[in-house]
Image (cartoon, rainbow, N blue to C red):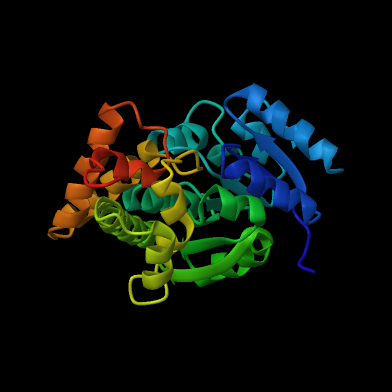
Length: 300
């Protein structure tokens, strides 16, 4: 059993709420803050039903006041800047020697800014974006890609273990966020190809279950195929990771690629395809709803 800590958790969305709950279930003393207080109260009530005692704070600063480890899991660069650097922000209120672990998917520039700001006041930070979606968070099976010092990782890893299937220290500050960008580029490309493959098989009148059986055991196999083929065929898109969030993530990835002088034509094209689905009102649908922009055709 790893050492138990006083924990602050800022951001109780689809990912943050179960992650914070796992920390409480592991025995850590958790104080949470969420900008929408009703969501925070609902989370606290859910924890109570599970026999877990957790505390709520009125501000980020209050949440981290005596925390040994502070976690953030919010929306984007602006949201993160608000809870860390804004009025009643967490950073200035963190205790001496505390560790900051950011699970938000943000730009690498923001991760490096946070690293510099924490070092200035004698603290450590880890940028630790996650992959695995809502199911991964609920089941404690997230993949976490991390940037920061070896010392910070040594402190962060045993605490993150309670909701992780894999934790990889990729490199210095910003490396975790850049790895997450690569992750999102892979997902976007795979879903683009998977959407077209499903439409082809359907238009040709193939048995969709048997087609899946035939191709999912070979080189075409992917997490997206295993978990989304059947639901894409049925036009079911009510899952955790929304197109709005994917476009935010791809925006960071494409910006970082441009900064590095790289061309990313596939990711840029799929991003525009997602923009079409957004324009049709599908921004809150799961990323597999990319298929909806393609007509079924043929015998479907």
